[in-house]
Length: 408
Image (cartoon, rainbow, N blue to C red):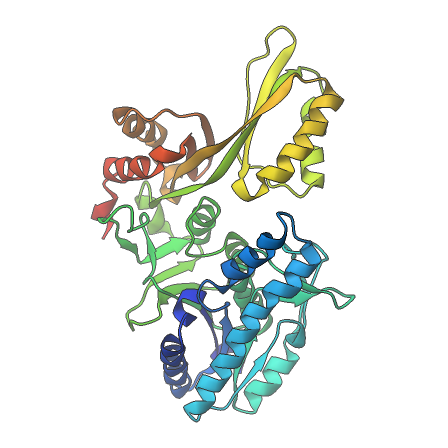
């Protein structure tokens, strides 16, 4: 049975209205008619998660995280019930389950929980009875039966975790886009769909701002060798396959340009240039569960240095509080915060075997007069922090410089 299982994940945009839900239900029925066992994972409909967050923040700027999980988990529960109703209206036998009901056990990090154990027997039993199984994404529970959520995009992670537990042949993601593009088509109309990507490329793109897939789900897929397929919820054509790297992928120098405007930069001023200070700073930030991205330390001058780093704008308030305490403890002179920065990045496994990528990227930005504030690199990506209001212009300039429209 295992090789015959397909996990189909549908995002919130594809479930935003009853009409769209009916269309998704028909798509599921068509897949089931091909003789496949189908497990469906759904997000909350439309922008419901954002709306629930807004309601909580209308009460307080810092809502309790446990109660936020209780609130946000209700979005996906609406989707599973409505999808079950839609499928049964088409005479398709189906059953819906919450994350806890199918045995998704997480740690106790509310709003950003990690899966520690995955069930599957309840799903397998339902499949043997000929049912389509619908599972609420984004949610689980702790060993103490506390409801948790997996963070933004956690429904993607649920889908891949289920595909792994069930040894599914493929995990398909149905979106309001028909695959992964060389850049965001809303910013670069010339962007083209990529037929195939390596896990590492998709992982970098997801981590750097591409919102097609969640980075933790790609990590999970890579570790367990689950083939991912990002495709349109309304068109039958294939989309973008994400799998292990193959030789021909290195022939392309850069596969895509990603960006995010949800960055903030913090600079701790006149930090004592002593062994162990950086460790103390970033250990404290890690203890606050703050994810640090780009880090730059200035050249030491008169026994002091400045340390800058970027974080998500969503974490800026908590980061400021942590840094305020750190400044006093380490004897720094103060700190500055800038929430008007963004990040633009180029990604491609071909960068391992091609030189000149950094030079071309910096030239593209220089030609437009865009100042680079910070730089971060890895084996297959280069990222630049720039002013938030120049991000889109930077994406277009880089896309044109590398002639990515010709990858089609």
